[in-house]
Amino acid sequence: ARASAPALPMLRAYDFVMDEEIPKISQPVLILWGNEDRLMPREMAEHFHRDIRDSTLRVIKNCGHNPQEEKPEEVNQAMRDFLLDVKGAFSL
Image (cartoon, rainbow, N blue to C red; front, side, top):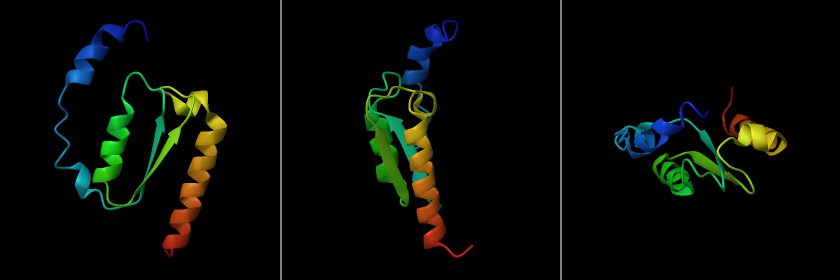
C-alpha cells in the first residue's frame, strides 16, 4: 500500500473516459461503496448508479475503501439480497 501511495493522486486525476460505456451496461449491477471512502468519493458511486440502468447502490456506513475487508458481514448480506432479487426477477 505504501509503495503505491505516490500513484494515487495521478490515478484519481486520470480520466478513464467511461462515460460513454457505463450506460451501455445492460445486466443488473450491485454497487458496493464505503461511505467514508477517502480514495474514491461517494459521488462516484452515485454517478455509476445514475448511469447504470439496472443498478442497486448499497453504501456501507462506517466503512472506507475496502468494504469486503472492513464489513464482510454487510457485504455478504448485500450480495445475497442482490442475487436473490436478481434470481427472482429472471427465470434461470
